[in-house]
Length: 619
Image (cartoon, rainbow, N blue to C red; front, side, top):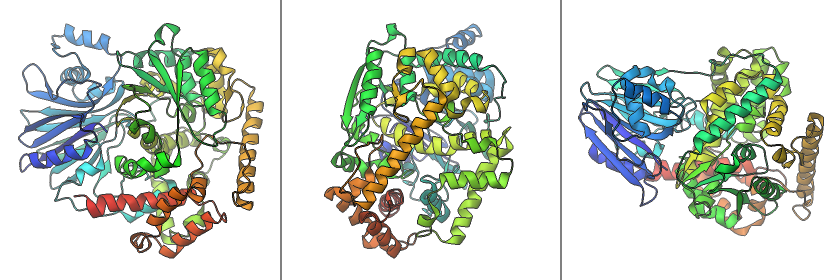
């Protein structure tokens, strides 16, 4: 996965450590590496040579400033011309050079004028000061550790622990959070001294130590009471603008296409004249429902080729452990299935367009009807916690009562940040989920695997579009109310195609969509009941849109052996973080159809494999 690594050390440069850090994230031999050492700074960029392939760092005219950048910014021609009119000279004409001149012109405020997905590091050569900043939504992670005026930073945790002086101490509470939510809340990691750089951050280090500040937060957009029709029309205009911005490349492009609404919105926003050279990709598996048929139908309507690849237990296991290493163990391994297709070269574009969180934010999937009625913070906190946490009766097999209380307190502390900056509990829930489940779960399951060999672009995260979406009244966003009207206005033909979440036309009236969703959920529940009580001998043909890893674990011998060999290994059973006897029971109950423990088993499995790779073997 491409990224930036570096060390700022008052005791001098650390070229050997920099070399080890680069190697730790150079996942393919063909990756390119740009290195730079000056006084107290040692920094490098490991990249694919696709976006901004020119060598870095890039210097300004008098060479008193230079920049390293991972990622890109969009649609800045007008601002570039403005800079040129003020005397700035562009020699390379790429994104990092533009950002460097913006910094020269506007100082630290420059980042507020950018629209993109990026990590930018600007080095003040004369004053030996380093400024690191990221985009509003933290779409490209950067981790850092700071001790004794030494800052180590990297796009992957594994690079930081290459420092032989770094003390690897597990934060037990984050292990409990991982078991509870499937990811770690806020900006913490499994390791006590490593943090994730918060979204919209500026990190600065020099003679006066490390300073951090936010330059943007979710309280910025004000809720505007525009009519629904106005919201629909402006959303269509801004989304089409976003897609046009992200199609500006000579590189081959693929759009990931499912049976839902997010990805079809992207291809529906592409003008007919711009479809040449664009393809779509859909993953399939045994037991999937109508998703592949929907994807092909949508692609055919838009005259875009649809390619499909099948995920099998064997293919998944081939890359499962690599997936945990790639994402630093940040989400359970069975959610990293895109890696199988990327690593097998089933998807071979330079750039992939994805519709991440379009449904969650614009479609209102992160909003529940109860959020609009509740007026008590204590009840609200419990409501969100119960919704996002794994079932308590399962967690008590692994987390004692005192630890569970600590996790809940950590959850309250995190969600309080969003309650304070929100106009309502509905907004607080939306922001909290975007920055926790969205940023963590969606990034590590989708973007991290893609970035192993490709670059990605996310039209829903275009600042102009997202700013407007976050200003729309929450009741318009709820239950796809505005999303369906948006889709009908965007492309009426694809709005008539089924949505795999309801099994009925996407443009059906709201009450029919609600009935369709309840019917599908009921069928899935009935399918689960039949499967359990017949011990897998009778499984209703009603499919799903996600692999049944729990059944793979029960029925596929290779899968069963892989999971059992690790969970029942002495290292796992004697781990200080788990109760070995309870792990045995969780696995036994699952294999015997007494319970569906798929999720908790894979969370335990992921942490245990991460521990062996990162604590026992690395560094």
